[in-house]
Length: 288
Image (cartoon, rainbow, N blue to C red; front, side):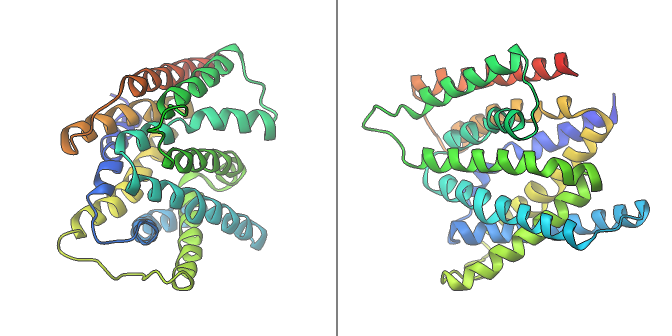
């Protein structure tokens, strides 16, 4: 079996229960949890990144660092904070499916910013994704969840970050670029916390340390190392399969562990998003 597929499988298995594990971290503010998660994850990634920098003799100039600081702020204090706040305040199944629809927005931003002309399959997948989100949100019902908007904002800003990140990853590689961006974004968020009256480390206890370490070391560290290594050994298109399995796996965990119940509208919308993901992967293969 190709080693790339093994690495991608590892990343899928680790990242699958991310939303469910997040909801098991009690006693810590959502923004603080986001800071701790990426602080731990960034430190876990750092040795791998340093090794890659030395091996490839990478030189990072000031303008490159400034670009990565901007990307880090967009990624962690903005996109990931909105995601974490939503996860803490709504269902894990809603969180995983809405955020995993970000490839739809990535395709839109790629067409707009990178001038990538989408083929018919990708256009169709975008349409399926938007219709799926409409069914999931059920905006004309009294039970509309306001945190759905937080999740959409998180998915949109993550997609924007993802497209802007391509130049940086192309220059330095996925691992090095992502690690520096994570560290810069974590420092920026860490500077914000005292101004907002949010502690850095208060609330950590024996009751939440294990899920916190899971989110940091595994969910924000090892899973990304495995994911990027898998893409290096396969292709970006194959790596996209992670976003195909992730919401399905996350929802199964939410049903089993958190006893969440799915509405008919959610099932229809989720099915359309999954179908859209399949069509998008096929469309990317046709374009390559």
